[in-house]
Amino acid sequence: MKFLLDGSTEVQQYSFLCGNQTVFNQLSLTCAFAEEAVPCQNAPDFFYVNDNIGNPTAPFLTEADVQKAAPLIPGFGEGGGAGAPPPGRRPF
Image: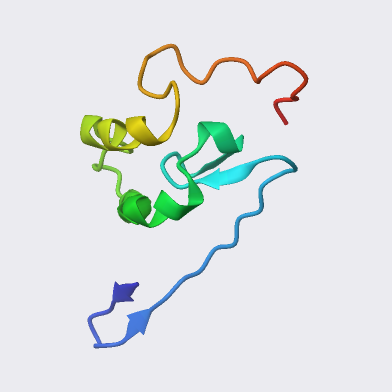
C-alpha cells in the first residue's frame, strides 16, 4: 500500500501461479518444491520480505531471515544451495 501526498492510497495486487508440484515460497518469493519451501502455515511470518520489493538499497534477505527459516526447511541454511531435485522429480 502506498500513501500518496494528496492523502489518497494506492493498492497494487499481483497474482502468482506456480507450476505443477510446486508451491510459492514466501522466503525466496519463487516457486519451489514443497519440501524446499517455507511451509504455508508459516508464510505470514515472512510477509515482511515483500516490503523490500522495489527498494534498491534493501537487501533481499538478511542472515537473520535465513536463520529464521532454517528450522522450517530441512537442509536449508547448510550451504551448497538447493541442490538437485529428488530422484524422479523434474526441476520444472
